Amino acid sequence: MKRTLIEDLVKWKAKVIRKPLILKGVRQCGKTYLLKEFGRLYFDSTAYFNFEENPALAEVFEKDYDTDRIIFELGLHNRKTIKPQNTLIILDEVQECGHAITAMKYFCENAPQYPIVCAGSLLGIALQKQLSFPVGKVDFLTLYPMSFSEFVRACDGDVTADFLENFKRGDSLPTIVSNKLENLLRQYYITGGMPEAVDTWCRTHSIEEVEAVQQAIINSYELDFAKHAPAKDFPKLSAIWRSIPEQLAKENTKFIFSHVKKGWRSKDLEDALEWLIGAGLVYKVCKIEKPFIPLSSYADDTSFKLYMADVGILRKLSKLPYEVVLDATPAYREFKGSMTENYVLCELLSSGTETPYYWSSGNTAEVDFVVQSGAHIVPIEVKSEKNIRARSLAEYRKKYEPQISVKTSMRSEVNGEEIRNIPLYLMSRMTAFLSE
Image: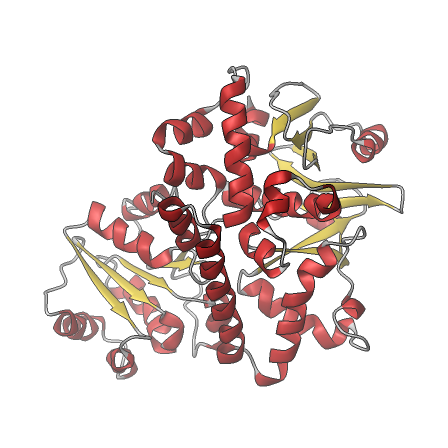
């Protein structure tokens, strides 16, 4: 399955001043597969090391930080000479070896000729426990679950995916194509973007098997809570994690700590919430009072929404039957809006947009997302079906007169100047549409 981040890895390989790389991402989003594929395609050989499968590897880094010795001993473990420039070194599940992270400082300073990539589950949290993190001595990339276009490439082939990725404003969108994309998007809502779930769907088209994969992923996340989090935080982590679908299902999607468990307050749960955010499992979208540059200066950190890193995991965790997604059952209407917002947020992040904000004016109007695109502050109104009435966006436009606004829905039209209409299945192209 082709992942678009491989293009960023190729750019990293070509850097004149290349630091060791840390690839961040939630568990099972495809980091190991991507790095091995990168090594296969762009290097003469790959030296792969997994600290979870082989705990004895940690001894290589615990003696000292002599890079020549480390390379030699890794070569012994690999039973093959590690060659500078031509061998990609992959250190997987690196959260199990704090000294390996610290060693990246010395590879940056003393042995930059060796291309090294570190990856691991819940890496953002594990890094906080390192003896000495190599600040300024490593590069970072983030791998998200598969985007909709990556899902289309895996399940429907290159022709449809290339059409999606190269679509420009003004191009025609035939009805037969828009119908196909809408159907694929509903499938994506069910499977999400976890590579194993996508692969299972492509091979079997069995929703039962997809859901078994999703449940296994959810179980692995909750095991990680117990393994990596402080013991005192484990019940709080599980409670917040399980509360997100319930709170998104309500009309007021602002996250309310007291709804997690009766008697718990924000000060009791803030550390656990930051743990989930740092691990990449949860996205926090804060409210802004005024949509001015820089957006962060106008953010209210105490008023926010929480979304999940994958729309398929959200559906499974919320126990939402797949039939209601495919058939658009009326009883699904309220949660459908939040699920569609979650999808749009994931598409924005995977296409390189910074974490957006949302805007609210009392109880009268709420715009789902507000992003900065170049010199423009762009409000985005999300509609789950073909209804494009957007009272909140109209209120926002009346108050702030933005040069560009976005409405996204299942409508197939790609048009508009001041208000750009973008189909949900083309949201990954939003930045390109705005620049056009």
